[in-house]
Image (cartoon, rainbow, N blue to C red):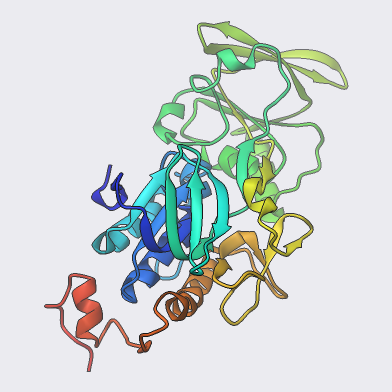
Length: 355
């Protein structure tokens, strides 16, 4: 594992505790580090990157500034490289099961493995919350999971030369069905109807590939899987015309996510629709002083669920957190291009300075 994600098992006092290791949480490490604040990052997943790394590590992202195209895993890797100088501690594969404010104003967080962490401020950057893929209700599914049946594309090369069945009617299903044409031996897209929840441009592209004979679309539902030792060979579908067997050696199922806030929902924060945390738009602080919510998990008028928005929120929340964690110090706004202090923290003090 990268040095940036190596944690000390003894140190448990930090300036800021960040819940969530997705892009927004990782960029918060950077913004806090520029201000000289030490962070610990907690995530229920066993690796950094959040949904980017877990659900679409190889899917292209087109709206990250200065990157015309970058995958979820590449973005995660770049962020880890960027925050490496700040030596953040990571507690991965763990939940925050306990949350309380101490008499001195700091926060005490208990992790699922029993460790207690203290922090002067808390950033909730948990994305949409705890999530798991919704699975098709097919008998014997577990025997094929991880070998022939997948809920995300983590290794595109493993799909090369396969008879691929993609199931779903949203953006992920259509995007991957389109993208894997030419990589897989054959691509079949299946949905319960011919109406889709995907972007119109994706639907049009899929229809074009279908007309060219490069992709097949079938309307129906999964009924059964056929294969041995986890190796899929065919699927049975149920359509309005009855049952049909399709050759398939790999199955990608995109049925969406089951999302819950988890223990965060019991922290007494002001929730919008029970799923998002209301914050102000000055510093993205919740109704509890010292607790901030950034990224997809927060709500405010005009909120856009973009990674870019999360980066902006992380920057403002970090400056606000500094005033709470270091009330005796004056916060000086500085630019990385011209501040020798910031360049020293970034370990690039010898770099050229802007005029």
